[in-house]
Length: 173
Image 1: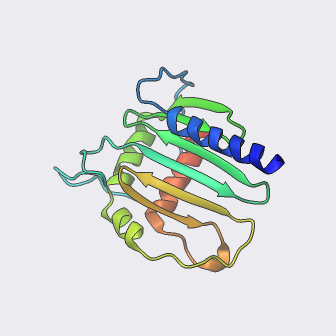
Image 2 (image 1 turned 45 degrees about the vertical axis):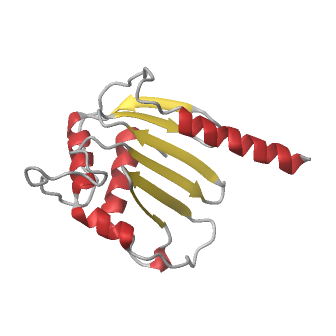
Image 3 (image 1 turned 90 degrees about the vertical axis):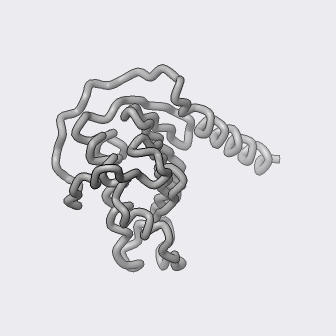
């Protein structure tokens, strides 16, 4: 009986995450953060006419899900094309805000990086770690990710840079 109620809670949280990040939902914004350093990848602006994965010229929704770890996390952050973001943790708590102009520009450049599409096409291998965080990133229709496990080798560079940007810019811990 307990298993059924846990499954019900998981389904409800998934539904909340999927329906709770609507582009028409008003958001409470936090004060804009000053741009800061911390993302280690240098990215040139996309060439004129370039589009992000998903093909909409830079206006792509970005969704990052982090799962696993010792505590069994299940958190999702969704960033709308205008920079508004919503973070929903595994308990269903929500935080909202807006990326600074500099962070939104960086997000768009990373999302338009052709290496992101190449990373998404790369085959994944099983992880050697237990209790590690798994990151799944969707940029439009492009999906990529990695397990944060030091013995698995380096994570995909653009994907990792987007994960780091979203952690830093939203205060996600």
